[in-house]
Length: 305
Image: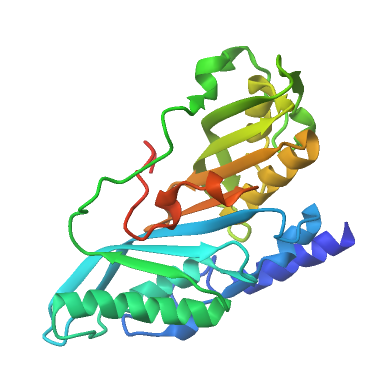
């Protein structure tokens, strides 16, 4: 417990370089990669007995307020999709990347719009790869998409369509895995594909609320009941963690409780500061939909996104 407290305070100290502060040197419209802040993933994983080797996964960051200018002063604006592998030692702190991307606003990159687009992609990838010591994928969409944005299939049922949420007593609001109860599958092995928009957690540093939709695929002999899964998801309502950490906590709790053969957890969070963060963790790479990792595709927004 003492080690968990130390780790929590360590993360809070790192992230507070920008988070929770108004104004200051962080706001710049000239390119400044020194604004970027990295956070060791191990500081949260240790508290849940995770090493990062238990799953495959990526974090997809969609930044909607990205712009630079050409050498002739022409603005180029669009959506920047960043894909970071979950096996990286670090993840980037959210406000720091917002400030970093803002620093491109009056930075001259390339003589044409096309050169500016490729230049932004190359520069952001280089800076994030160096910061996080990993291989990111960066795509800058500065015009209408040629392909339709993709999302999880319609096979995912909304929990509220399966059980009557009005009849459930929600009493736990602090990440309580004891809320999960088991249903025996009829044939000894079964599959669930469930989604819920009940996910709410809070920023580690500012305690501002983060809202998201969670998607869960599970195959195994032991599965959670839909009502207990709803109560468990709601139990994160007052927890203060980063988006990536919430996703990994859910993955860890479901793994520990049910020992599934296959498991995929994804949390599609609403945007804050012009950026939405979408972590996904899975026991097998083939459970991760292509639209997460393929730079040719974007993720179709949920209602709240």
